[in-house]
Length: 91
Length: 413
Figure 1: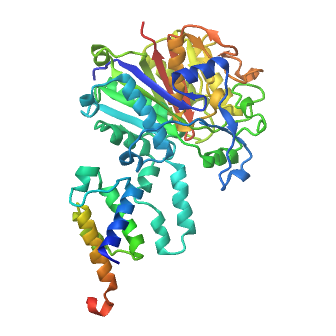
Figure 2 (figure 1 turned 30 degrees about the vertical axis):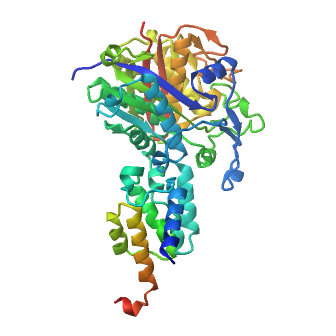
Figure 3 (figure 1 turned 90 degrees about the horizontal axis):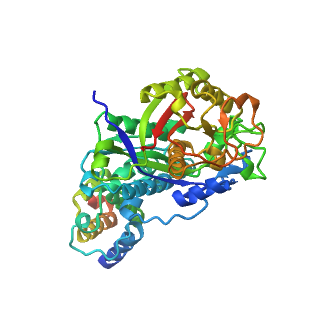
């Protein structure tokens, strides 16, 4: 999964679930598009579906500081990389 | 505590007989019923004996942004639309709307049953943990019992009091009554009050199981319900929403608001016993208490909007109570005859329709009242449309749980 794949998926989620078309990369999503805490929870569910894997409570808490599209993509990239890493190396 | 006068400065209803004043008045004048055949729900509808439903069968052009839609089930769409209407009609200044002196008293019988049903479907059909992801983060906000109230406050940025009565058929009459008291005693300067309920076959099943639903007119939906008629055979469940804007009189007058009527009295009591059977003593007491609250005589009432669901016993008890308190003079109309029982919305819708009749100077007849049951004959039934001024009206509603309300409104001259 490339960063481009992730970005395409996130843009698709934003359009489909939040009716936000082509959000800018570095703007504060709440200020620019009214993306609020309810949307953030919905986004986490969408990310779980996309990754085909449940997020831990710890991982979900890490998402609470996210404000921009770029941060969302970074976050998913980090989650995806973690899931590719064999468990023994993850310790 | 100093008592202030409270007036109604706007009203709106979405009902099985139309949306807004023009359509609703036309239906009342022409005697049009909004009762239709029950829709299939792929769930329980095949097992329900009653095949009729008071249906909102026309499209409504909602214009709500996603920010608001995302926490709204069908019931909140109805509620927010009538709330939007009364806010626009009343023309309150934006800084007042958000300033904390405007509150919301609104309700539904149990939030959004459509959303609840989807949650339960997942709950019972889920085969693994992942399946539960189908329950969305906002499903509770869409389905909770105060979903109408808080979606209204969110949509319009209202920061005043929230009252969310959930007392079945007295939900919105309580909303208006408690909103009235909040303004009367200076806790708020204005209140948006009302109620809503969406299309829901579970409610039909509940009344059907209690043998309280109409079943004899399944092939002629518009012939039922038949309040006070000998051939009545039960209620017809319906959907809709109604809202009024209440304001403190001096405040409304000072800003040049159109005053539709004054709320002059309200009473609410409990039967203190059986949760289903209508109670003559309890209902009689409510009507008396509302007259005392308004400080008027029974002779001053021109029109009674009866709760009259067309159940066998309920109509008799109500007629006896109204006859005992108001006497044989005031005209009595059973507005549910046009649309069925809109549940949480009925008190507000019936108040809105009463305001329309007050404004236009006519009294609609009770539909399908062809042969008055002699046990209900002690009151002055309206069987034909009459042109008649209405100065003071009583709107009464009674609910499962043994809750009774009576609201008195008066046209300002």
